[in-house]
Image (cartoon, rainbow, N blue to C red; front, side, top):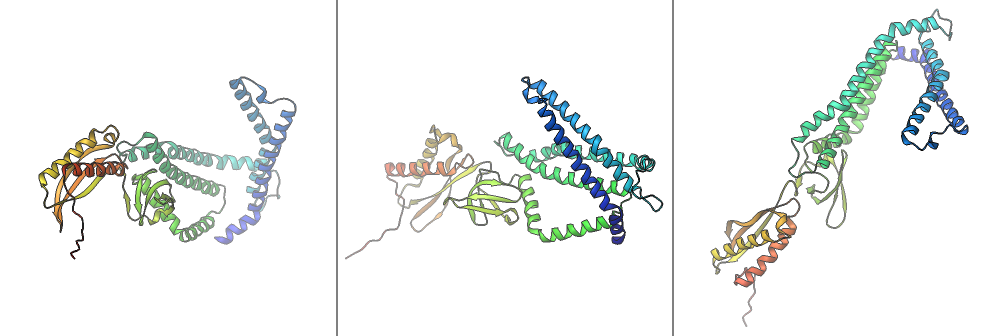
Length: 373
């Protein structure tokens, strides 16, 4: 199979490449010189003040130049390629076998046209219908309060990957099918592409793993730009993420670049809502009910605060009495905040607790050392 492709490439393939390159270069050169000549003659659409008229004249000019260049250089190259494909044992070299070329168009043109139409329909489906289906699927994972622009960006990122993969697949199948119709031995070519694909896949396993994991992260909306997360022992603000890696900036200003394939466990501290979780020690000598009431009053106070209150979704309350310690009783003081606002609310709550406990004379136990002389 390999020898048959090599023989075909030596006999015809090289000529096809040379004629194709000559045709492309010829079309480009003729178009370039025609555009330059028209500009020197004063036929420049940029001089027209009306935008609509300028656009119309520009489009007509482009179509005219491309048609002329294609007629002068493209059509001869096209028939040259057809002539090469029709060369057989009884053919007279590179004759312009118009009749044979016409026969080739009639016999193979319809199947090739059908393949092109099917490929075009498939590309349209990949470009329009698939993104809409992806949007419907991903909309179920939209977070509460997520801006539509952020969700659209997430959907578009995921859709670009799927769309690109489908387009490459469709184009590759269409090209191989057309080459097979034209008589090109594609079996060995497919085998070579497969071997190359396996080699590339084995050499880039980590990259493939990163991309697949990145697609899952984006599709499931596990995190987004602006979230505060903890990954692989690194915590900080997500500055950017894509299909390859996640950028995290920690409190020291260091930027951590984490490949998506390494994100076995992602801890998102700002997904949908956050929580203030404070454990408070109260001395055994204090009135426990008084301490609980004081803490609940603090929750009411911070909720009514014009600045901090708008960050709170559920006001902090004494959730439970967790345990006894060596020096007092532990109380769990818990509230729910807007995503990422738990530290700001926590700071205000701790300040209010210190002020209220001082006013009420409630002591928080701490280690003391007494020295007797």
